[in-house]
Image (cartoon, rainbow, N blue to C red; front, side):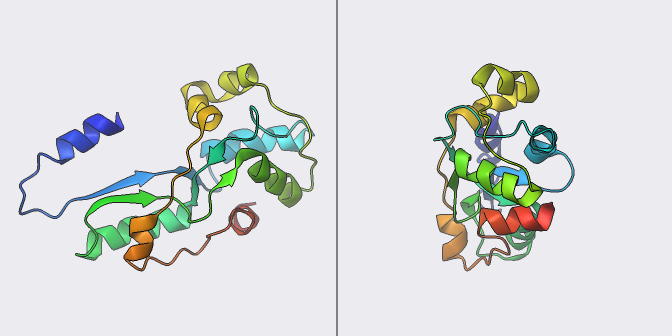
Length: 157
């Protein structure tokens, strides 16, 4: 879907400024990945997803909204811009921080099949992982409000 969308976007008139924001896993209070993970932790059934060694490239909802705003209003923002926090983490580390913020242990690994049952097609993003850095956003001077996962999770939960 992303390749098709970007392919279509690239057909725009060359005189039009084009910013292609590639968004990581968005963490916010309502919906998304956290809404599906928090209940497991609250039932003391939270823990690393899959192996836990896969990279988790995330971004706080406030930061992605601000990045999109900057891309709309600042003419310097053009081309591919990764919409991810500057400090991706291993999924086991993210689950450990989530457990601490919720006051619950992060000890029970969630097997692949269970994750697929809960997240459906979205499970492949979590199980495969990617380490994506916002190099261009940082070059443009974008300031992240939540560069670290523990601070983002504290603000959300």
